[in-house]
Length: 334
Image 1 (cartoon, one colour):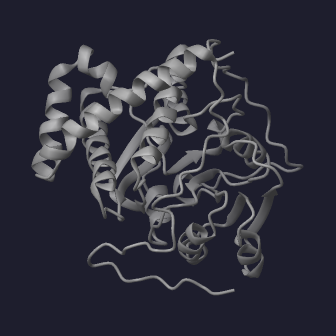
Image 2 (cartoon, helix red, strand yellow; image 1 turned 120 degrees about the vertical axis):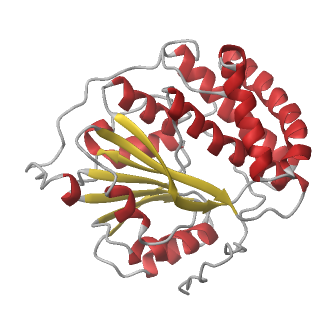
């Protein structure tokens, strides 16, 4: 039931015949897990950079009826392992299957619809010390083409400033279009929707530091229709309510506005200073977020399963604008 606390399982030993050696913090063996469903265009943006990187093992959890399988099978790299999901079962189930297979000491969890430079993995790995459990980068949308995608961009601006403010205030931080996580922290999940926030909060609960690296930047796309953006935010708010009910403490603005109004006002002010157009976007975003919050909380109370959510289609086509100053990346053909 949705109202039950999230489980905090005891981690099983690694399912390998031989232990994975730990050659030191900066020599951590690396694995990457990419999650994608019906996202051939996204994989064509994401995989080339990943294959150019120094990551030693790459597992792609994919599914759908598009050309993803044909494209992935055309790649020839001994590090690449493919896991086809015959029927869509939800990301947390794919995650559970994936963590049984990877062998790295440090695992990069990657949403299939992002873009990044190949060097980002070495950069994130360099931030690890014995007390660091998770490191995640800043996210910058690149498809700001209409009013709705402008709201999505404003949301990421607020998210960025919120993480920085919470980090300075000693409050929990979480994020995760891409996460670098110690493998020992990858525990099985049972129905968790916001697994990125869960992993960060659990790492902190277990005594590890969670770091936000603003210098490391990944690009993503945001929804371009109001319906897609509202459905996405509804699911995220459901996930935050689920975490709270499970005894974790996500740092969300709807909570902080009552507990730390000074922090919230500072976050919003800096988001406007960073991008003046946010002065117009933020009131509209606040109205949309309130609707999504109400619907997400209602879904939680009613026990609605968001494990297999409706796919966001807008903003996920083959176009992916390259930020100024960054060279275009080659996308391999079939």
